[in-house]
Length: 195
Figure 1 (tube, rainbow, N blue to C red):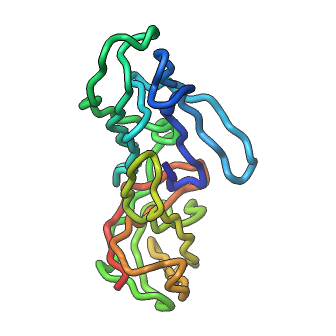
Figure 2: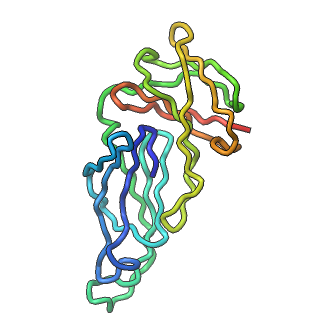
Figure 3: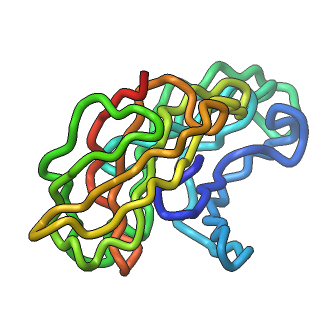
């Protein structure tokens, strides 16, 4: 699952097809794009394999769900049912200190246009991200997007943002707008629409 902090949450899967031989993987790791490194995170409570998914929530947490193993034991003799539990995972960035807040932003943002938004900690904002809502199936999501939004200071508590112009990069959709501070802590997202 793409995170608003230039990281990717990697969780679930299985060593063998659909959890055969009791092979559900509960390891969770965070991939840091900038450093090209993986770090360990808290293990998942539930095994997630075939027909599972992960969804970034507006508060920065990640919801994991599903999983359809073939068998319920290592001997592959007991039947298994579709996993109906959901887990909510709080990434480490939620524990790094106070979160910035986007206190005002337009509800509709057009490509190539500039807008004013109001934020707390404006001098500490490192970057802004538009995150397209997840739409996973079979542990794959071809709709995920993490799009950088350029910005500059625009007076007390305000930033002037400019959206990219490429519709292939930023297709029409609803997006979560996150502000991320210098400690790597994201705001709660503000929902916006790009027509």
